[in-house]
Length: 78
Image (tube, rainbow, N blue to C red; front, top):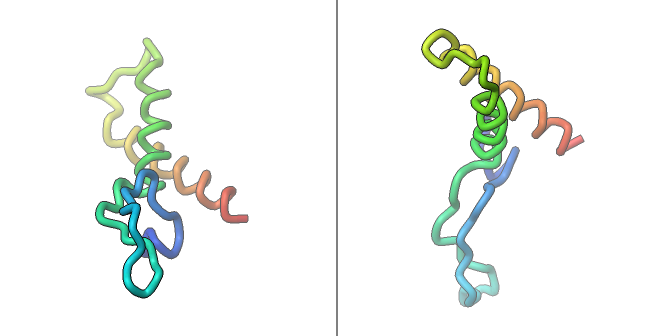
Protein backbone atom coordinates (compact mmCIF):
# COMPACT_ATOMS: atom_id res chain seq x y z
CA UNK A 1 0.00 0.00 0.00
CA UNK A 2 1.30 3.46 -0.78
CA UNK A 3 1.79 6.37 1.58
CA UNK A 4 -1.44 6.91 3.58
CA UNK A 5 -1.30 10.66 3.03
CA UNK A 6 -1.49 10.17 -0.74
CA UNK A 7 -3.88 7.24 -0.95
CA UNK A 8 -6.16 6.80 2.01
CA UNK A 9 -5.61 9.50 4.61
CA UNK A 10 -5.86 9.23 8.35
CA UNK A 11 -8.88 8.39 10.47
CA UNK A 12 -8.30 10.57 13.53
CA UNK A 13 -5.57 13.17 13.02
CA UNK A 14 -4.89 15.53 15.92
CA UNK A 15 -4.50 19.00 14.46
CA UNK A 16 -3.13 21.96 16.36
CA UNK A 17 -5.56 24.88 16.57
CA UNK A 18 -2.91 27.41 15.62
CA UNK A 19 -1.51 27.81 12.13
CA UNK A 20 2.20 27.61 11.43
CA UNK A 21 4.04 30.76 10.29
CA UNK A 22 3.46 29.81 6.65
CA UNK A 23 -0.30 29.46 7.24
CA UNK A 24 -0.54 25.66 7.26
CA UNK A 25 -2.20 23.76 10.07
CA UNK A 26 0.14 21.65 12.16
CA UNK A 27 -0.66 17.94 12.52
CA UNK A 28 1.02 16.67 15.67
CA UNK A 29 -0.46 13.17 15.70
CA UNK A 30 -1.62 11.56 12.50
CA UNK A 31 -3.65 8.87 14.23
CA UNK A 32 -4.45 5.55 12.62
CA UNK A 33 -4.73 5.21 8.89
CA UNK A 34 -8.14 5.13 7.31
CA UNK A 35 -7.28 1.64 6.02
CA UNK A 36 -6.62 0.41 9.58
CA UNK A 37 -9.87 2.02 10.76
CA UNK A 38 -11.89 0.35 8.00
CA UNK A 39 -10.22 -3.02 8.70
CA UNK A 40 -10.93 -2.68 12.43
CA UNK A 41 -14.56 -1.88 11.66
CA UNK A 42 -14.83 -4.95 9.43
CA UNK A 43 -13.19 -7.07 12.13
CA UNK A 44 -15.72 -5.85 14.68
CA UNK A 45 -18.51 -7.16 12.48
CA UNK A 46 -16.79 -10.52 12.01
CA UNK A 47 -16.14 -10.95 15.73
CA UNK A 48 -19.78 -10.22 16.55
CA UNK A 49 -20.76 -13.44 14.76
CA UNK A 50 -21.34 -16.09 17.47
CA UNK A 51 -20.32 -18.82 15.02
CA UNK A 52 -16.86 -17.32 14.42
CA UNK A 53 -14.01 -19.53 15.68
CA UNK A 54 -11.00 -17.24 16.30
CA UNK A 55 -8.43 -19.99 16.84
CA UNK A 56 -9.25 -21.47 13.43
CA UNK A 57 -9.61 -18.37 11.26
CA UNK A 58 -7.52 -15.53 12.74
CA UNK A 59 -4.98 -15.19 9.92
CA UNK A 60 -7.60 -15.51 7.21
CA UNK A 61 -9.88 -13.06 8.99
CA UNK A 62 -7.16 -10.42 9.27
CA UNK A 63 -6.39 -10.66 5.55
CA UNK A 64 -10.07 -10.53 4.62
CA UNK A 65 -10.67 -7.47 6.79
CA UNK A 66 -7.82 -5.62 5.07
CA UNK A 67 -9.11 -6.71 1.68
CA UNK A 68 -12.48 -5.28 2.65
CA UNK A 69 -10.78 -2.07 3.80
CA UNK A 70 -8.94 -1.81 0.48
CA UNK A 71 -12.23 -2.24 -1.39
CA UNK A 72 -13.84 0.49 0.73
CA UNK A 73 -10.96 2.88 0.02
CA UNK A 74 -11.12 2.10 -3.69
CA UNK A 75 -14.87 2.82 -3.72
CA UNK A 76 -14.33 5.98 -1.72
CA UNK A 77 -11.71 7.27 -4.17
CA UNK A 78 -13.64 6.47 -7.35
